[in-house]
Length: 248
Image (cartoon, rainbow, N blue to C red; front, side):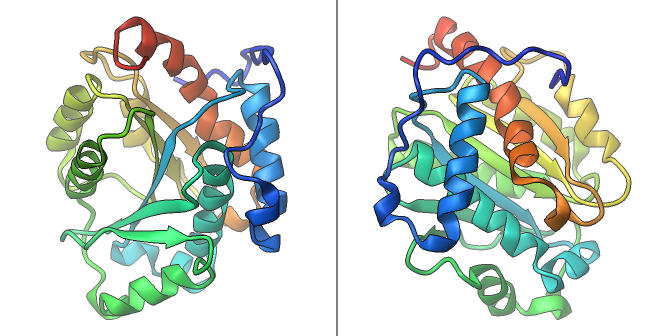
């Protein structure tokens, strides 16, 4: 569970972004700089990780697709990614009650990518239910197939509890044995109680999940606050994962 009163760990040295900011589009430079500050505040200087973005495409999410909130989160994910991963790519997984193909968000084609993918799946007409597990499995399969040695930081966005809660809990327990951390981001006026429960769930090898609530208008959340919410508990997980042999 993310402790808002915890004093951030002092960084050993300033964080060096994985990519030179000269190669980062102008629209993402400010986000990358803000992400760098957050990493330093949370003791993650020098961190390298693979950033994933999972997006809820259930029908209740239609407003957030229409008003640009989901695209804004995608931009924020890419801004974080260029500070910890040098490939300039964030794998994007959309889900509702069906699986959708994983696609890569690239630095040279990130603008409007969310709307493009959303419409390619039928737009608002085909938005379904809320089943987390299919997205979680897609991320794990992709990560394991990549044979990455750095951990996966999964930004998992949703606006409600899943229709497959027991499967989600089981998946979270099983994935606690992998170098994969789930950073849940809630949209909506009300907090998602299920996500708060996951954040404190017992039975895992390690606490491999956190929860940050971005509220009813996620575009208004300060970028620094969002990044702190995403990486704060991740910073506590890293040394524990090393101790358990999940990371080098």
